[in-house]
Image 1 (cartoon, rainbow, N blue to C red):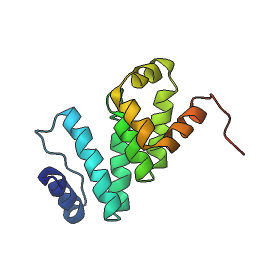
Image 2: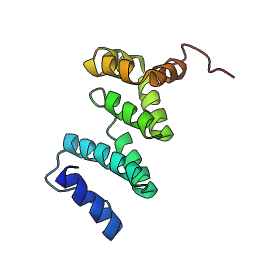
Image 3: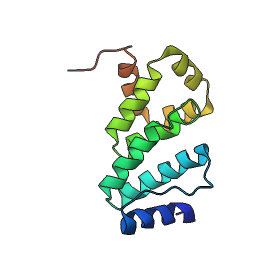
Length: 128
């Protein structure tokens, strides 16, 4: 675990607050919340996990969505997954994401996410 992530995790456990170091830029902040989400899930800290999910919703974009969507699937973050699907319902966003290398990786590593995406964008009806 990265020292910055560990420091933020301890700050939450002992101080009941989620502090992001001032030197973190927006991209690094998104990565920090990704790592914190994994740690929160691993150690069963549900409140921190929920806070990270909320923060990650603010970082959904073309360059980050495949990683965030994979994390949402792996760590059972259904609200975060739905936020990603909502972003991908916009044809311009979907087209931009499909053109990334991350999309190919997501297709290989999380096939269930792809099935959910097909349903979310309205290509198929959700099975009853």
